Length: 610
Image (tube, rainbow, N blue to C red):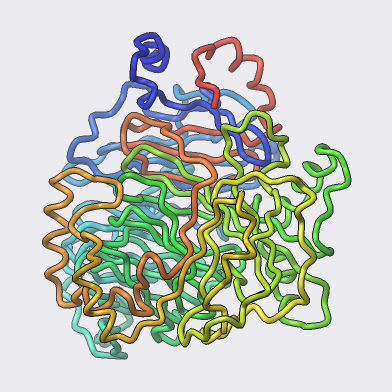
């Protein structure tokens, strides 16, 4: 195996070692080598010039209790298997369905979870030449082909999704920057569609299809400039977040067809987007190598995360590790096991529970709520990063908000519960400077402190932080000098001063923060010449400067593949990643290794312990 070969070579090769397990506060995540899905021959796919490998899951609720199904595309091929996850080894010799396409390649796909049964599933597949196919991989029937003659759009399909709660409506985005709403019941017509303007706004327009009888597409959205890379519906299905090559995140009220808010990348295009389980936060990633956290309620950037060394290709929230506490501040009087049990219990809170608990923060008489959102990202640097979005970032206006720091995973001596150590970085001196802009936060660095440093929690205040909070200068004198904690200073300069400073402190937008190669730099160079001048957005609400918002450190940042990563999906028992070579990997959550543990230990002695 390549891993053992690399380990044997040694001598400066450690950086290239692929990790097969990693540790977080919950415990150890382990790669299940027997649960790897790929093409049946297991030969690495030559991915040059090919579309990204993507993965879709559906549960068909069959009687056997093994209702999970997986679909993935590799090159010209599309596979549909029973997904056995952490329970049993993958049997690649028996795909339920396999398709090979000529002249076009699958680029993305999505199952309709509403209509899925053991006898039938509706799977949408988008293609590189612009078509969209509706297939049933169980019945093996090719139902319908949309945009077959490419009269609607000739560019590559970048994202396809069923509209939440609908059995027939689906949305398709293209590299042209257009999005189309289709109904599976309607035809696409034999002529190019004629459109009529329905609504227009800043850098977007929506048209209806003008025809005597109802035909597809029902709506055409033109959003931003350049390719529309990905879109995601909010958990309640009412809002739509889109990310484009022009570097903008745009959030729309889907039914009202209205723009809710926007955000601009630090530089380059935005490639991926996802919503928090309660719909309050959006994370986007892209060509600036950053993950950017945007508040849906406040319509502003609240944090950025820097851990990747190249473009971020996927961001995803982990619904199962997002924890919510309703009690007083957690006192660590119990054992480590008690704490782990508590965390496991919190981790099971699903999205609706999280939402109801979070809403309690809006009432002043309720007990404090403590919340941690977990999300992950994978990138072209072959690395997986996990991030915790904690309340010191979410609610920096609380005078005594606890700062949960990220303990260094390499600290072998720290207990499993160590990642939720409390540090007294919060301050009462929040009336220092009045800054008339967004609320700053605290940069939590990797610091482990004794548990006794937990602070009492302040009374709850509203979650919708007013953007004019007086939390400017946080006094550094009250910081424990032993703690290397950076405080994000808030820019109180006028716009004129900022423009003058901009030339002195240029952030080299033509070079990635993670030192990406020169070819990528050339692409970014071209991007700065678009209509929206990055120099005009930098330092504004659309795109705050790096020093103006908290910078998150990743909990873990591990190289887990040889080729760029294209998939990250969080499931209840595991998380799933995939790389451009066509290998879909299953990582068992702590304590979920199950039946495969003995086999794994016997067969993979070369696993790198982190």
